Structure formats: structure tokens, C-alpha cells
Image (cartoon, rainbow, N blue to C red; front, side, top):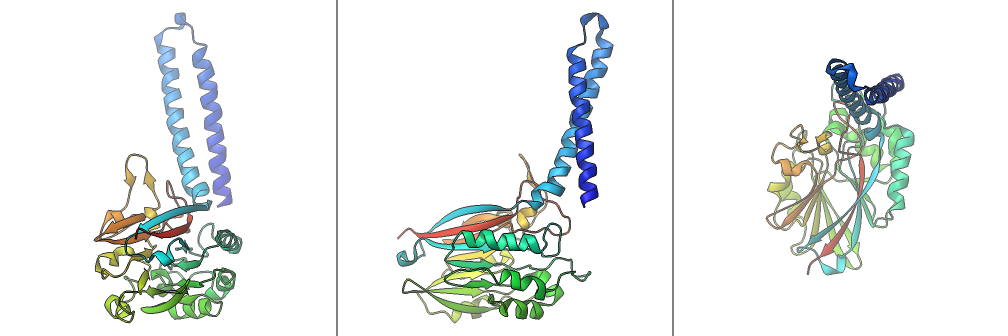
Length: 318
């Protein structure tokens, strides 16, 4: 990766110097030289500009943007939300893909530090801790990265679900490692929180691709009239949620990883709706939030979709 980066930078700088030189030479062309030489210079100038743009885009997409980490602040105003729990702050992480490009121990420590600096009330992680595609064995064991993630801190705790990559590896082992370090995993399970004297329920739903999300059975265990936040890896279950679930938090899509100006994402990251690719969606009175996550999958590339930690602030319109 380092060699490729150096080569890309060298090519970019070489093209930039060539372009600067061509601009200077074109400006110096006089009228008596004729249109032929000027036309050829303009052609070289155009080709150099296109190559410079392409090399710059490749360098950004493969070496710079995937290595960024931004904090995204989002405020969701919800009608189905108790006023006593208004302004609840939730840090959302997903798709860390430890062992993949740009995600080493130091990067995990940075993720933890920057998340803790936000001082959230609650931290949720929407799965895919592991890198790999199910055919190759990941190089980093969960027992290595779980203690690093175990340094996450929030008054209401740290909760998680598992994703398809975790189950392709060994979901039971990932769960044991996380829970041994204070991160509670919910697999078609619920957790009751007390927020300023008001009950708040988390419903963790299993991954859609590799498991069976038992939506109705899981939410049926929660008393009627009490606030529910559902957490899952894949957002495509959103239309199946009962109306009483105020919010679903998910990841999985990576925001499609590549989003071109004026065009949008170049792949369909959701099998149900393009709207589920990233961000805030409202349908039938309840809410979905999809984070673009932190790591990459299939190709180590991001363009227009920087890795993110999200801080959600939930407010009531009541």
C-alpha cells in the first residue's frame, strides 16, 4: 500500500509539473507561430488535465478518503418519542472491519478516543467488526480488537449486534470476545434502560443475510407504550418493523462507498430501497438511520463517502 501510494503521488506530481509547464508555454505562443502548434499544445494541455484529474481521484479514493474519520452530528425529531427522554445522545459505530485496509490497532484506538470525546449517553455498534469475505480467514482475531473497543464508555452502556462478516467468521466467538470486554450483544434480544426515570428499550435484531431476524417475537416482549430503539446490521428489514418501534439504527451499506457528484452512488447498496443507503429516512411515521460506517468491503475505496462516527441527538416533537 505504501509503494502504491508513493507511485501515485509521483505520477500526480509529474503530471502537475507537466501541466504547469504546458500552460506557461501556451501563454508564450505568438500569433506568427500559426494555429497548428497552438492546437497541439492545447491538446497536450487537455490530455494532461484529464490524466491529472484521474490520478488525483484515484489517489483520493484509494489512499486518502478511506483513511479519514469524520464526526457527523444528526438531530432526529420524532413524534413517537417521550419528552422526558428528549435530547438523548447516541454514538453510532458500524462496519469497523478490523484487519482491513487502514483499520489497525491504532485506528481502533482513535475510533474509541474520538467516540468517548463526544460524551454520548449511549453507544451502539451495528456489526461487522471483522474484515474478509467469508472465504479468507481474517488476520485479526476478535480477542485482539475486543479489549480495545472495550474502552468505549457511556453512562447507559455499549450495545451491539453482529453483521454478516461476523457470522461468516464465527459469530459466537465474536460475541464472547465483545461481551468479555463489556460490550453487550443483542441477537433477537432486548435490553431495558432507565433514562431519567423513563424506561427505554433496545431491541437487537439478527442479521438479515446470515441469520433470522425475529422482529415480532423480539418486540412483543416489550410492554406496550414504552419507547423502543431497534438495532440491526442490515437496514432492509425496516419495512417489516411494527409501528411502535420509533427508530431503527443500521449500517451494512457503507453508503455505497463511492458517490459521484451529480450521479450519486454507483452501486445499489440496499436490495429494498435506494433511500436506505445512508442517512435519515422516515416512512409510515417511524424512523431509520443508516450510518456509512468506518471500514471498507470488497475494494479498499471510498469516494464522497468518508468513514464516520455519528452522534445522534433524539428529540421529541410532543
